[in-house]
Amino acid sequence: MRQMRVIAVAAGLIAAMILMPGFADASPADKAEQFGVGAQYGTTHVYVAAEDMDRFTASFLATFGGTSSPPSTVTVTPTPSTAIWQAVKTPVGLVSLFGFKTPIPYPFGQERTGYLVTDMDAAVSAAKKAGAAVIVTPFPDAIGKDVVVQWPGGVNMQFYWHTKATSAPPLQSVPENRVYVAPEAAANFIRSFAGFARGKIVSDNAQAPGAEIGRPGDSYRRVRIESMFGKITVLVTDGHLPFPYGRETMGYEVTDVSDTLTKAKASGASVLVEPFKADGREAAVVQFPGGYIAEIHSAAK
Image 1 (spheres, rainbow, N blue to C red):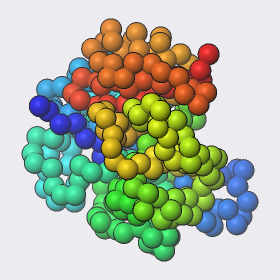
Image 2: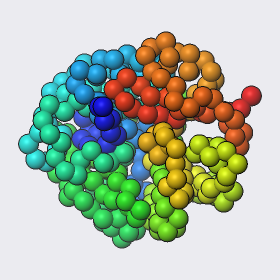
Image 3: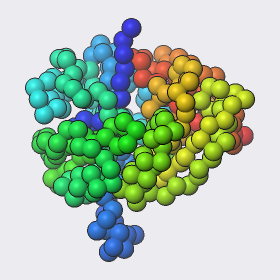
Image 4: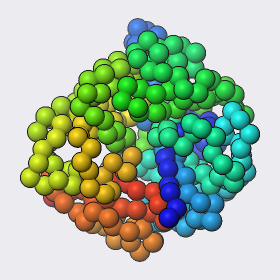
């Protein structure tokens, strides 16, 4: 069975479709410490078999709308490798789609998100001070630099930086990076990432409804963080998760879940978790052609 993984490598490749805004609303002090640029520059990297790329792109765009770039052959790691790459831009989030033609060099394949930073060296230094480990040191790409860091709890992310600043409009809705961590690691992850990102904890629910992780009648801790990098939902669990929970690394906010699922199914996606309501939301989980699993949610009606 094909495995589909979400990683964050060479996010600078999507420069042709996403652009960099200024900091008109930031104070001088904020400018010195804020490394995030905007949620519209956060990328989810999706890996599928090369022969599944067209089916994934068609289904994803039919579900959420948007556009894609033509596929191109690229090297996106600091060691020799070859992949077919395609940028997929939707109103609810950006995807870099990869179909590797060679084995994937370690540790690539484990990062979930690529975040644009204002200053690579300063961002790496600040991340290390906040508790992150640099697992792939900075390396050049065609238009900037990339690095991969690991936060407490084993959460891998990538930062990227562009030589030339550009700009892009905000997303229609900001996707949620869904991070599953163990109770022992939760405090360190939240403190480290939120401190680095200058993030705000918008909610911390120690009794969130277990239906959100496939365990109706139970409860778990759910923490939501927002920053210039976007949204992160931290799901603190004991790891007793029914499939597909824990496999969905991103949650997409839509206007109407039922309408979105109709489009998804018509375009070849499968519904793994039928719509349910919890904590003021309606949510479902789908799998797109090629294996990518995503949560989809809207405000409950």
